[in-house]
Amino acid sequence: MADSKNRATAAAILPLVGGASNITSVAHCMTRLRLGLADRALVDEDALKALPDVMGVVDDETYQIVLGPGKVARVTPEFETLVEEGKAAAPAAPAAAPEPHAVTADELAAQGAELRAARKTKNATPFKLFLRRIANIFVPLIPALIGCGIIAGINGLLINLHWLPGVTPALAAIASGFMALIAVFVGHNTAKEFGGTPILGGAVAAIIVYAGVANIEAFGQKLSPGQGGVLGALGAAVLATYIEKWCRKWVPEAVDVLVTPTLTVLVSGLVTIFGLMFVAGEISTGIGTAANWLLDNTGAFAGLVLGGLFLPLVMLGLHQALIPIHTTLIEQQGYTVLLPVLAMAGAGQVGCAIAVFKRLKHNKSIRTTIKSALPAGFLGVGEPLIYGVSLPLGRPFITACVGGAAGGAFVGFFSMIGDKVGSTAIGPSGWALFPLLDGNKGLGTTVAIYGAGLLVGYIVGFVATYFFGFSKQMLVDLNVDTREAAAGGSPEPLAPGEPAPSKVTASA
Image (cartoon, rainbow, N blue to C red; front, side, top):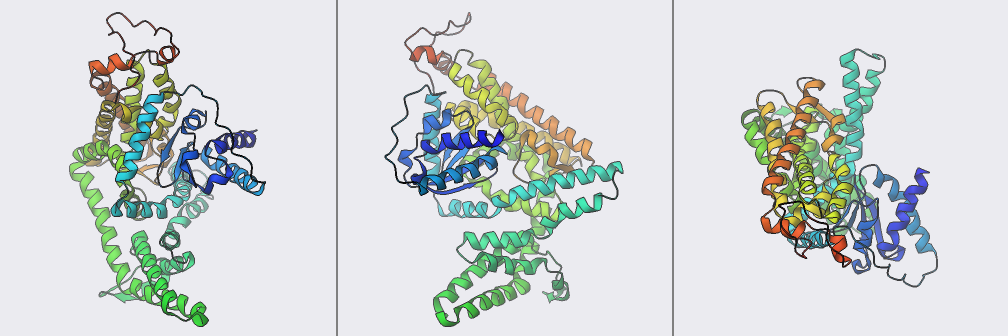
């Protein structure tokens, strides 16, 4: 039953993105189906967003359809199968355009699309494109980080309760195995992203975690396995890729298969052992020290700034720079103390959306959008609320950031007084982060602080939006039954004291 439903979702999406012939690539991350499209003009975005299982779309380097965690992993294989079947079949005439239909919050959606397009243009800078490449290295690792993180949390709970002592060592091995070798996966993905041979990138990165490096001395001290971590693996694989490309250019074809891999691994391996491991190790240690110092000494202020600015960072694409930092902290300390603070931005967004829902009592279109997007928002998937509600409206986006700042300050304050809250994996936020929480004062304290932080974010985001998120003119323009107005009927009557509506259905 579940498979047929997922196939039906895939079948509904395919014609709305131009059919199988328009698909050049298919992939997915934790929440989004990512499509390469030959012609984006063939996409019927309004119809796509009207599908029940589609939470939103993001027009970026790939065309991204937000389906939510779990759902996207099940729909993607069905979609790939349909694409393969469609391409294998004889070419058919282009399908007729779908019949006109009612679009939920159509004017807001159009404004959201314009904002996405503007953001895409701004993001096409060398620095942001580099950050995107870094994200492409680490995003495929997130499912394993989540799975191993949850197992580590379960194992910690069993140990604290003194349950199943014969099983906990096995769970510890399962949870720790991936993290022990994460450098190899980073090296593999880095070489793939930068145009090298992935297995050579993994081979060079494997040097970092090899136990035998403990017998090697560099910069006057013995190396330790894992020194440099994911940052060292990234640097080693990038170096290996450039050496490989140089070899492909100059080594004769007759001996390329022998000489190129040998020189690639040898040269980049020596540089890694006698340079990169030490340098990357110092940088990694500095990152951990800086993150701990920041929250230990300026926790409330740091949380205020990080929680308040995270949504704008997402809009600018700069949040991708945090991915290797999170991964480094998890590798060093077992959890990242930054993610729970940043997750408060989503709480502010949820509180903001609830306030918009309460304020615009007569705009059924916007209220329908919020009702469909809120469950995903509570689970940390914020794109539908951002692009469909708060960002196009303008002021509510700012008040959502205020809610995030308040929640971040709350969690940061407790870190400052010694109660650290961390996450054993990156990716989820909102309620979905609860199974991944860890800290230095026990699971109960950690969960309580994080849950209270979410509550603060919800409340402050709601209050800030309810009282300061709308000008009088915005309420006049927005608080109208857009469906009846569009059909030529009369809007619903307003409550006593509410301003009379105009014919405008959305305002930035």
